[in-house]
Image 1 (cartoon, rainbow, N blue to C red):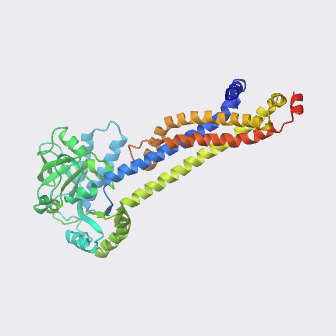
Image 2: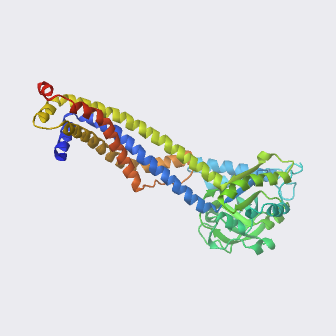
Image 3: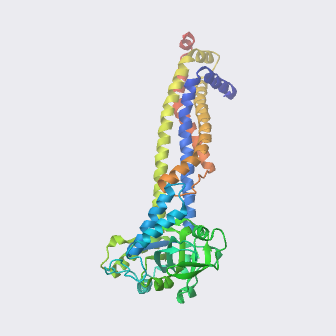
Length: 455
């Protein structure tokens, strides 16, 4: 096989039939770019899942009681509404937003301290309490840890400054173990904080920055829940996971929160299973056990989220995305293959006399067939190489689009493995082989005498 002659022939074809050849190559470029970009985006998603798993904790199950007393519900609704509006308006002023939140929250008749937690005198429904947590620990030996969480929205700020509304969570020292939390400054809650109902708090990285404006936070005091709280630590940036925005969270001992609120209520349970399989089984068992203790509650108000379940949902989404994109790429390659076959048939017809000359000077049918087949493969190889370059350029944009519109996450970057390049180029070569086979057979079966008479 004279590869130099074949390459020269292909270049001559590109010059004389430029539009036709470029259009035939373009389909291969698009299909190959779709293959490599989709594989890189999916692999990036797998890496994102792995990092998400490491940050979220080990075999975590979250049970959330969606009941909120009226003052807490009002704070939550106003807070979330104003935050959404702030995100939609680029030039929104944080101080004005906080002012709106505080004014609206103070307008609630149930927001004042010491009133009925329901806000309107209606008796509270059955809720989880600390004794229920102890009972669940005894009845669920498959759970390595079960830790309570109490959540509230409160006005938080430094003395003499305008407060802001923030989510305050009452928890325990082991809650950090389950959620794999790490502190950037100071320390986290310790068992003695809960035992003595100490008025100490740990701040998320963003809320600490907003309140203290970059100054050291550890050792300072905050006003919230009608009292002064000493800051003992600041968390490392972690983001939002399992319905918690840790960067804007303020954590205090759960016993201290119960004392300040005047009601012992557990809003959520953090559960660590002993293994992945146990987490899925524990999810259903936990919901059943809690509903057995809260008989008057709507089962829809008690929600259970399993870490393994979320991971499987994301993995399913990634598999679906991969199948869809590869299907589109395969269709594009199929269409381009048909186009290349058509171009090669036209080339055989235009070069019939040339083929007759080859055979007259001793070229065999196998030589003719190998030449046209190699020309088709080389055409697709050029398209595949250009497609790989295009796919590498487009993969980052595709990952950003999927992250923002489908997965609703950030930090998703494509990951390229060497096998992806080999697979992409191999696929384009395979298309060249398949699409060039029939035209090569047609060229090889031409009779030399008939071919030489062709004009």
